[in-house]
Structures are given as C-alpha cells and as structure tokens.
Length: 362
Image (cartoon, rainbow, N blue to C red; front, side, top):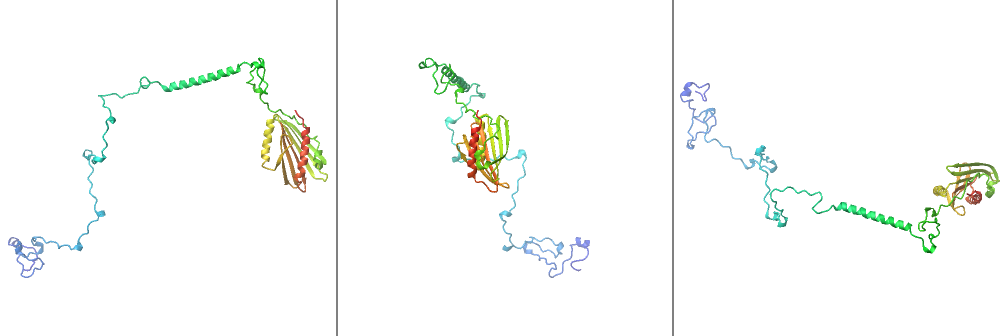
C-alpha cells in the first residue's frame, strides 16, 4: 500500500485503527518528530491535513530591534474618545469654581456696611408727591419769587420815569423850563427830554431839476470845441430822479473829431445820490482810475483811457457828487494818435466848473 493512500478510506480503516503506519524514514511532510519527553505522546505519522495539533503551539521568532514599531508622536495619537451626549436628566452638574485661596477672599463686611435687618414682611416704600413731610416745593417758589422781583424792578423804573417827566422847572428861570444847550424845545415840555424833531436834521437837497443842458457854453474846452456840429438833448424824470443828458459832436480846427458828453442826475435826497456815487467809485477804482480831485463839489475823481477802435481814441471822464446831484462829463478825441492825458484833463475840469455854476438850485 502506498503512502499516503489514494482514494477514500474504507470502513475497516475508520473502525480498524485508521491508516496504516508510514514507512520508516524521514517524514515527507517535514513535520517535527514527536517529542515524548515534552509531554506530547508520539503520534503516528499522519498526513498534515489529518495530523493532530501540536502542543505547545509554535511561537513566532523574536522581533529584532530594527523591526520594532517606532513610538507614536503626539500629533499622531488618536483623539480621545468623546462621551456620548447625555439626556437632560443625565447632564453633569455645573462645574464648581476652584476653592478660593486665603489671600483671595473678600474682606469681611464692616458693621456699618451691613444692611439693616428687616422685621417681617415690609411693603416697598413709595416717595410722597410732595417729598418728605414738612418740605416745600422750592422750584415753584423760586420761579414766583423771580417774577415778583422783575415786577418790582419794572415798577420802580416806571415810577422814576414819571417823576422825571413831572419835575418842576428851576427857580432861576422864573418858572420857565430850563433851556437845553443849543437845542430848542417846544414850550411847556421838560427841557431834559427834547423832542425827536430837535435832533440834527439831514442836509437839505441843494439842486433842482437841471433842464436842457445842450445850451451849455463850451468855450472852456478851447481847441477841442472849435466847431460844434450837433447836440442831442435827453431830459426826463424816472423814479423821482430828474435826469438831463446832452451829447455834443465837435471838431478841432484841424478836423479831428471830438465828443463831449454831460450827464446830470438830481436825486430826491442826498443819501440816494451818495449811494449811487459810491457804487460807481468802487467800480472805477478797479479800472481806468486816475485820481481823486478837489474843489469840485463834495467829492470827485477822474478816469483816463486810451484804446484803438479803428482810430486812436483818448477819453478823460470826471464824476462829481455834490449834495443831491450826481454829475458826469467826458471829453473824447478820435484821431490818428492818442492825445495825452495832461492835455485833456485840465480842459475837462474847467468846463465842469462852468457847468456846476449854471445848474439850478432848490
């Protein structure tokens, strides 16, 4: 019979002691031989798949140092397992604060800081509307006192004024009111309270409507009025202001064209004339201004301008304020060359003086 046997074992093999013993010699399966001295009985040489387990079981060889698993780093460690959430009735009690050290304890409360002991149940105290018993509403009293003081002061002032108005005249004046220095007063009134009409009145208007100015004598212009070609008057009254203009077309003896213009405005009041003059002065001060002039009304100034409009044009203009009169005169030449200011200015001033002397007064 060959070993291992082929085919299926028969009943005689199962019930008759199993397979027959293997032939002598080394085990073909490489199994360790039986070690009777170690408590394991010798077993017949069964095939590996039918051999009984060996005792003790074989142990793996010891691990060398270089084969050992390196220690796990802190960042490689697995997170600690978290406890599952607890139900409401399972919740842990609130954490308690650590015990306070002796040096951290609050100082004991002094006797005067302790709250007074209350007797039984006490209702909350409510302040009375008028404050503590016996107190007075000082704010209304102070307001009323202030009003009374003002009333008393006002009454004293009224009485003093009435007494001043009814004071008797001085006996030195023979029962007549004493005269105020330089200020006339109405008879029968106290002298130390003059009427408003006794104050200095505004200066009266000096000039009346100027009329037609084209009849003005132009001889003061000298050579610039050698020949008069035309004059254009314009007399009117606008807004209570009496206006009169006249434009003269003239020529010199050499044929140079010259114009002379007069513009007069007589205002109802001195104040109105002054406001108009001041407005023009502020504007001319920034352009073509020559100088302020004297001996011509209350205030006067001159402007000078040269410009080329196809012919050489020279212009000298004087503006005057005198009482309620605003007067302006302009001497303009048109030629092949500019005329110096020193030649136009004196002729214009002389003609202006002649015009002022002829204007009608109020």
